[in-house]
Image (cartoon, rainbow, N blue to C red; front, side, top):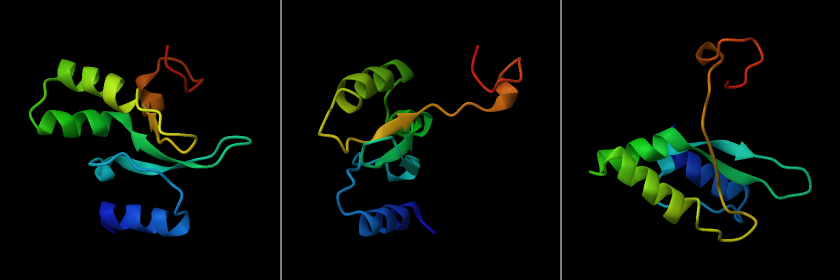
Length: 98
């Protein structure tokens, strides 16, 4: 299944979902929160990689991401962004970063 297909499937299942335009390849799922509607979840690292592939430096991508993406509240269905952390990146067994 292509990533665009994933976006289409998610939108068909829940037409009220909001998406971050241009970052379909970074969609990793849906996040659920108590008492709130589900929102699309993106891999923050993949979003930054996509911007750098388009010519931004890492610093430019971070600045753009923080101001224009995270800083763009468009309502309760605004997408969420996650930093994925593997257990092997940690020194202890609690699964949390140090």
